Image 1 (tube, rainbow, N blue to C red):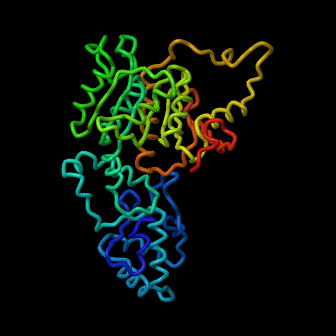
Image 2: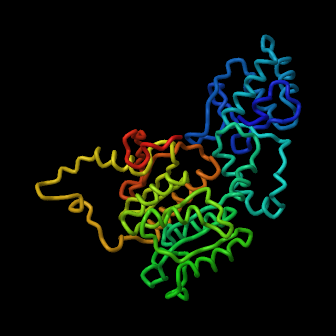
Image 3: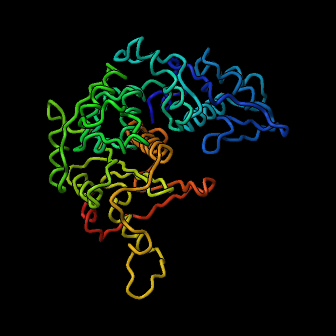
Length: 387
């Protein structure tokens, strides 16, 4: 719990107000709805005596909690100041309030405020944690170091998004050169980049997008979990470990298992994503918290009933090809979901417990899929990892 919430009873230092994106209104039944009408954010509070609505109006950032409590209690006989202070604490705990007296952290400049203000407002809207200042999320991004493996269609979108969002340092790894066949969906590149290493073209584009972000890159091919571990332990000019690994490469086929083992070994959170035809997926994992990639995938495989005939294996159902059918829509959607997972992992907004995968089937866009399995104590990868 953040300090202003923990000390709101009797505190005279913070001035609570309802977040502008959470502006309350009254329903025809007289209930108070707060937090917008978006599922997962909003809440509805019964208010038979009308004092909750009065409190919501008083939470305008002009007064301290004791001042608000005294005013509301005086206007509603039978209501005590402690009742009102408790309600303020509950609203803050639920993530509906911010501190009007909070200032922008000194590490962020006026240029940062102008550049990232819209993104901060979105994170504030989605934030249901008890923190009552908004710019801490941007400060988390500014301080973050991210390792991105893969600069294809999804990876290019993630790279652009992380740099646009103001992540402090981004290190990109990819072995390939830009080819004409890439340009139907890898929108980070241009025709004049054909034949250039992807990391060289990406560095040029990303540094032009945001000169305040430190962007580095290496042209390298990963051949096993040891290579991933080496990147995690030596990434960056000062050999500082990344706060997050983002995997958007899909080759070699074992790269996700390699990354899982390396992240477990180094204690690094990671997210991964990609596409298989019209099915786009993203996963989020953190050592010791929820299922790791391997125990999740093994449980998912055990739960399937493919009803294979004699002599058939899984490749008969979903054959592996040298390249995956893809266009700009599937690659961009995949990259966008992966970017969202990365920003969530770095800022804690929205709050999600790692150890899951979810996806969107473009053939049935109204039916997103969420896969979450419990962590297996006998998992060969994470079974011995302690939280």
